[in-house]
Image 1 (cartoon, rainbow, N blue to C red):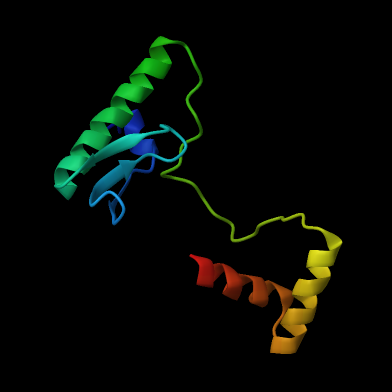
Image 2: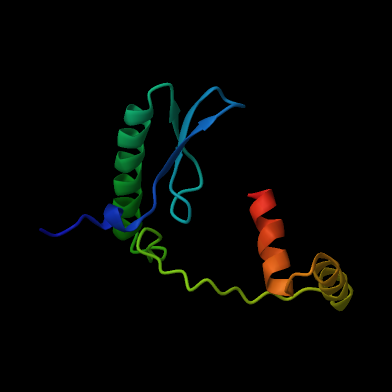
Length: 112
């Protein structure tokens, strides 16, 4: 069975404390999203919006953005930072007895 093109795009529905409702987004495809009090309805509306967005892009003969649902993540990130920051991170990692990689991973986990 052939998938719809919309199946290639990540769809996220999450509760927003600020808005006091569920918010549905499709990162990389649509700027806005949908919202509502019923999580299932928000997801259904989001799927419809993604499908309509894809059809509009095709009608306008515009390129579709890269698929996000089937992305493969290698676990590697190449990051350019100022040398002073690199030095500070290295020193902090040494102080904690960690590698620079592990130190940065811990810091990112705290933020997310």
